[in-house]
Image 1 (cartoon, one colour):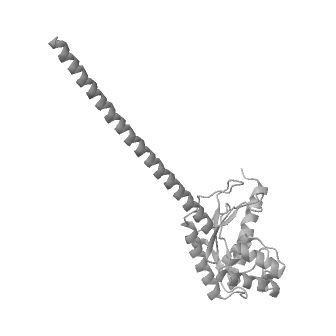
Image 2 (cartoon, rainbow, N blue to C red):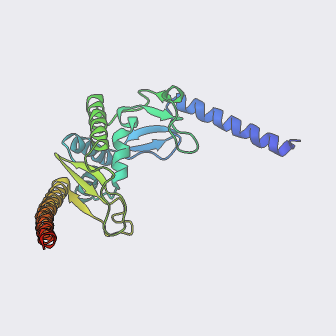
Image 3 (cartoon, rainbow, N blue to C red):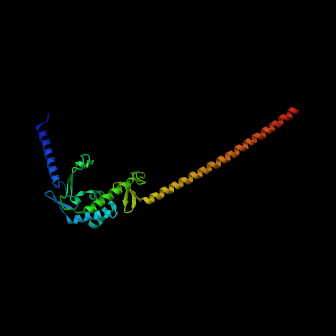
Length: 252
């Protein structure tokens, strides 16, 4: 039987969730303010210095830079240390075009159906134009598809930790990188062109040895055939000699 304490606890949780839902529909911020904003009484206002970083991140990605390169440039130019995963998160976040999203994920972290999302549009001042934001979304999807079907995806391993190398697009090149680089492994990072060269050379070498082996086998077979014919000829000679001896014996 449910105790009074359990009843009030469950009721309180439901009331808190209702309050969060109402706040979300109004576009009020309920967590730590994202990079580029400050939160005051649930309202987001632009923090100018950080907003420049956000604008830089979007611009550089549109120009073809990778998450990792952008993160390094942000640290170098703005003295702000961020991870490449943060760059990825920022590029996908609608908060930067003035929208607030809530209820996107389940408790296990999986994405809910978009019909369950709560979107409060134009809830605060945007940092990025919608034109730039959706152009970046198009590039993100395009790069995601191209890397999924990449020639070396899932085939190459780090020589140090044996992790499967991940493909990362950087400008007009693709680089294969160890996912544990800077996380306990000294890591591997190599351009796809170099991998392709090594693979092609290995294939050529295998084909060369296979061809040489086939020639060797063919030569050995030819040699064996000659020996077989000589052996048969010798047998015929012996047979003739035997027949001749038999004739002589009968005539005696």
